[in-house]
Length: 74
Image (cartoon, rainbow, N blue to C red; front, side, top):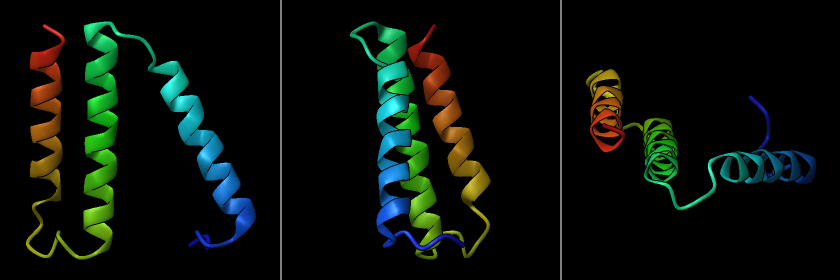
């Protein structure tokens, strides 16, 4: 696993997030929904790292994000 504290890894990670938010930019409803979905999945990833997935709820949480995203872009 890459060391997140490594300055080069931090720089690459920041660049990746900046590029994602640029691609998902704008005030359109779909763009806002995509940003919220990205942030939700990233938050779930962090929670999984700290042990939230002890009971295997990870996929159900991802399903929740997908369902909300689909409602937002209808």
